[in-house]
Length: 349
Image (cartoon, rainbow, N blue to C red; front, top):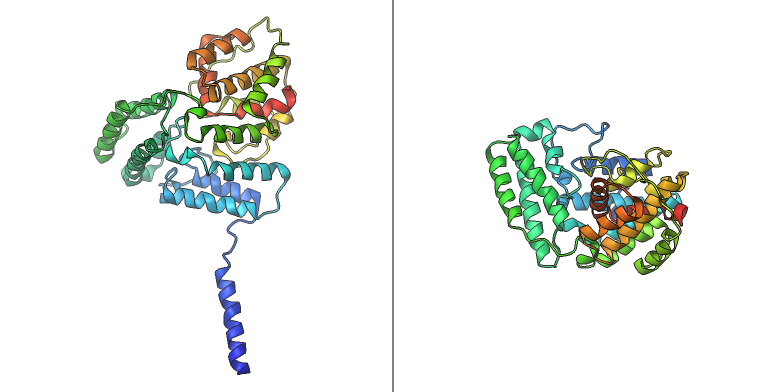
């Protein structure tokens, strides 16, 4: 009897040991590296060298989402700094929202990134699979009142047209791209360019405001705070005469904080930088502070008050005396990177 009990005890210990999954990552840095590898079609880095894409690296595929979730769960089990915990919580919350329905984030030319891998050029099966998935997801999203806005659709059309015109692809991939181009040309966008135009968009936007600002205020409260501060501004000269970037691959806020000491982040949209922490360490000039305040105001206007593109553009020009071209770029950037400007909330308000 005792031998039987001892055997059963040993079996229980063995089964318990087998059932406990090993933690795949043991540090913040390891998890960041894993995310960079996973997101290689979104943000290409010099440290990640691959010849072709795996199923996990097909943006927002089931395999991708499962891998990303596993990385986030590993991070939640680690001992992290407070700013790192804030990042993880923000990314985990974002999993609940509709981003996954939009397989092709419009700020990134994912197609061009995928074609950059030599192996993929000769065996484009995964790109074709991803294009089919992207179209299927866009169709599924419509059933939940989730649609692209006109800025996103315009960018996706430009990527596809550019690839086809330059004869970068041939054969089966070219046929699928032409079919996808026709699909996009018949696609009906949502009325509002802001997040509030999406199902659960208001909640998604609130989570972004909370994370980037480090404070919890409703959009209406932010609008009031910003209005009071902006009304005290006296802008007599153009805020910025910078060359207007040609793409939105790097958000405007990422470009602004580059001069600050780099603090590692986890999100591909921030190019793996901790934007709120880096912004907090910057000594912004009066003109840059004014720029950020008006960008925050426009951010709330677009994503909460449903401002149109012309309304948002006029607000930036009027407040900051910037060129129409720069205003157009900033408006598009705010649409594509909601809430990022609030990284400067703690230093400007």
